[in-house]
Length: 321
Ligand code: KIV
Image (cartoon, rainbow, N blue to C red; front, top):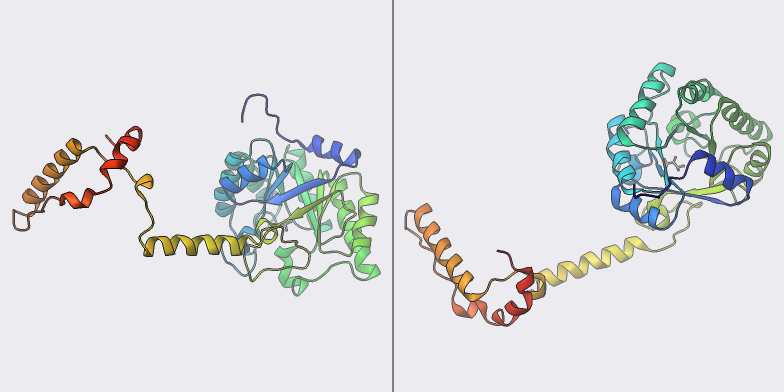
């Protein structure tokens, strides 16, 4: 981190909530994205296990491993100088008991350099959250639609739609707060439920598909940039049609290679005539030795350098020596 640059802490997020300052969180899975999010002033970057679906091409988040999260989490932590980096605990890394949870959360903190971890589940995960917080690991909770439970939920469905279920989601959020979580993601719950939960908690709520009354919002990077034409969830806004822009740029590149307009002399490296001849002679000798002289390379004809000598003077600073 640059000298004087202070990383966003859990107390900063609590302060933002107290001041009514909305908290922006975005997912990132690699170094350049983390750098961009950091430069855009986003205070929290989540290395979500959505990684499995948007980057690795799995159908759910279940196959994501600790190694995946460490690999991507450490790249993000290297790219983010100021943002608070949260890394998701993948499926199977904490459901098997607090000892596994503590060991795996410790690994994530030590091996990625992140600032906190996130795990899914309310009342059922509260005991684990308590152990991690006691051990000095800040934990972000996650209730409502919890993608790691897709098989018990019977799909990716809105949660808290009935009075009974809304109370369950509220109790889940309360249990996490009591266990010491510093913030809670509310995923895909009706806006009224998220609003009432946000009112009743004293820690920040960060919504995704949870309406406008949370203390903050989180978006999946690929969704908000429109990077995958097959993914267009209702709760995501495409701030740019990035997939189309990138596809067009790649087509232009392919056209340029195919029509010979890439690379130009300015995108290449040349040598002045003397050095070129020296190299030509050396390469010719080398070809002679390595092929036993059978197919001796011919020096490139002068016409091969036509138009190039004019560029040499200009490019001399870039010369490969
Ligand atoms: O994995 C993820 O990206 C998440 C967000 C959707 C909150 O958990």
